[in-house]
Length: 354
Ligand code: KG4
Ligand code: ZN
Image (tube, rainbow, N blue to C red; front, top):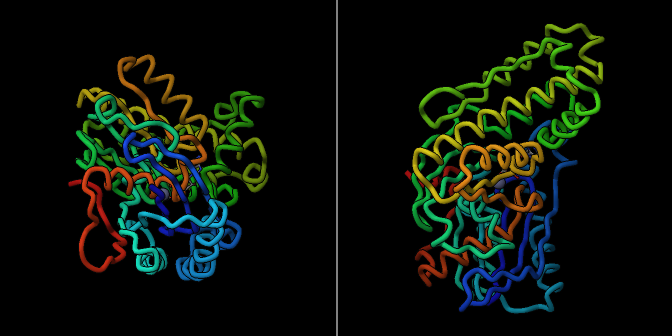
C-alpha cells in the first residue's frame, strides 16, 4: 500500500511517499521525502509571513508531488494524507485543496491529519509502533506554535494535561534569538551559540546571567515562556553596546536560554510521566531536534524513571515533514478503514484531545 502525504501548515512545503505492508503493522518503507524550505525567504521578516508562504506552497507543492512520484517510479497512491490543521489557514488550504484534487485523480481515499498528532508519531517513521508496548504514553509536543503535554492511553485517545499559556517553546527560541541578533529560525541558531560555550567555560557567571524557569515548580502541567522572553530582552537592553555585540555575551545568553527551556520541559514532562504511570514518554516537534535537550532528557529519564521508555524522533523528522503525516494517516487507516465523509476543510485551530 502506497501513501502520499502532504504538509503545508507553516513555511515548509513537504511531500512524503511511503510504502507499508498492510499485514505487518507500521513496517514503513520511505520512497521519497521532499521538503522545500522557505527559511531564506522569511528570514528578513524574522518569522513566517503567511501570504508569502501560501504563494510558495502553491508554486512548490505540485512540483514536489510530481518529483516524489517520479522518484518512486510513478506508482498510483492508495491513500492521500494531508495536514488539516492546526497551522496558518492560507497555507493549510493549499495542501487541503491539492490533496482533494489528487484524491479524485487517483481515486484514493483522503485522510485528514492533525499536525500535532503527526508530531507524536514522527518517532515511528523508522521504528515499528507496537501499541501494546508504548501505551499509555505521555507525549510532549514542542514546536514553533505549540507546547503541550498530552496523555495517550491508546492510539487515537488524547487527553490534554497542560499547554503553554502564552508563547510556545520554539517561539521563545525564535524570539530570544531575534533579540540577540541571531538568524531565523532561532532554535538552531541558539543551539549553535550555546554549543560554543563548552570551550568557553562558565560565561553565565562572568555576566551574572540567570534567566527564570517559568512555572517549573507549579503543580499543574501548563507552561509559560513569555516571561523568559521578556527577561532576555531586559537583560540585553541593560548591557552596553559593546557587551551586546560581544560573542561571549551572546554565547552565554544563548546557553542560559536553552538551559532554562530544557529545565522546564524536562522537569514537567518527567513529573507528569511519573504521576500518570505511563510506559513511555514520546517527544515530538521541532524543538526536539535540539541535541542538548535530547541528551538531558535521556540522562534524567535514566536516572529518575529508568522503567519508562523514552522515545524521540530522528532529529531529521523532529521538524515538519510529510512522512509523519503519511504514517499517522496509515495508523488511522489501520484502525478504521474509511476516511471521514464530506468535503475536507482546513482547520487553523484544530485541537488534539480535550
Ligand atoms: O515542528 P516545527 O518544525 O514547526 C511547527 O510545527 O511549528 O517546529 C519549528 C520550531 C521553531 O520554533 C524552531 O526554532 C524550533 O522548532 N527548532 C529548534 C531546533 N530546530 C528547530 N529549537 C531548538 N533547537 C533546535 N535545534
Ligand atoms: Zn510542526
